Length: 534
Ligand code: GLC
Image (cartoon, rainbow, N blue to C red; front, side, top):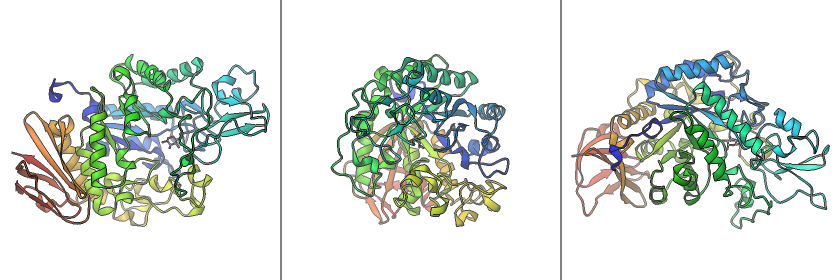
């Protein structure tokens, strides 16, 4: 069946927007964003053209990893508000015909979660097996060489019960034992709790970490390790991640979702394409969208990106729906990676490729990574490995709404500082400026929403070289040609076997919009165009 004739679901045709709740909008002057704040800003997201909102964790947590260390999966941290605030957020999101996706963190809990408190109480506690406890080696050292993403060994010695526990991330984030059926049931019940409330889906944190090698074999050494990278990369996580049985777990989660109407699951998975696509699951009964991080992981190089796009398109299972991400709360912002002049080209790529785009809050304004002085660093990844510049704070700074104090984010003292240029780079300043990044995003989103060719159409590569990428998107007799110059120098698009005729609909240089195209196209440096073909 042709793509355009199929029924598509909202998460296929729509665009997802990631809200980092600490930094979106504060409503009670404590300097930290909250649920009420998000509700206040829903009209903005609707105006922008967003279909689904993924909110990073706002649950009860000691905040060792800013909410990714959860001590009660069904409770709201008072910093973010109350359950009533949540219910209101959900209701107001739905009232605007948008969807709400929660962050589910099943791989690990906080060490302050009652489950872990029990588990660590004694070796014979009924919850002992809910986590990964192991004896020391005869010489007292850790059970194997596995490393924590946040630095050092992934094993922490527990003096009281004389065993090590495993934590892939922070010492305060012990990993659950997903081979234990009680753990599985407990977490599936967490999903049911939120699904019963009406949430539309989950973004599942570190999905590929959930099962580890039963024999706990040592991870192999990475001979190409570069000392500027995360020390975690010294080893290949061959045995600590991406184990075959993880797919059975994902399937169980999917079964829960499928017992409700139209709910969905995104998986956070950093793996090469051929391993990533396995997370769609057998018969497509895995994650609906295993996050595809190619655009944020690869160098900004036309040939490399073009081949990754084509490799991904080719590797997708028959019914697997593609998706694309440029930035998130763990990585540098897109503009800080590719530079201001390429930021619009990047947006055009994200919003014209085939598949669901996820936009990271503030990228639509061209918000950049904010330098956070050493003494203000808060992210555990930065604090644990000082001097390595690994803090994720710079990409998590408050949303810039207007030019008032603290950019309209808070009337208190913001938990992270704002950049010096927020008076220029903010929603209010950009809304009525047709040349702004925000107007550019809005224009792309609205074209994408209007045109089936762009939200469900087929994709065909046309050309790629050291400077540019060109492809078409087609549906229902409409065809768009997208040509992107990923360099600062002009380039020339002159296909040998085909003459493209049409009109430029959107260009990163607005002056060129509405001009006709007949044959060869000359592109300025940093130019990207969408041409509606005749
Ligand atoms: C995911 C989150 C990251 C967090 C980690 C541990 O990668 O995106 O922010 O630190 O999991 O939960």
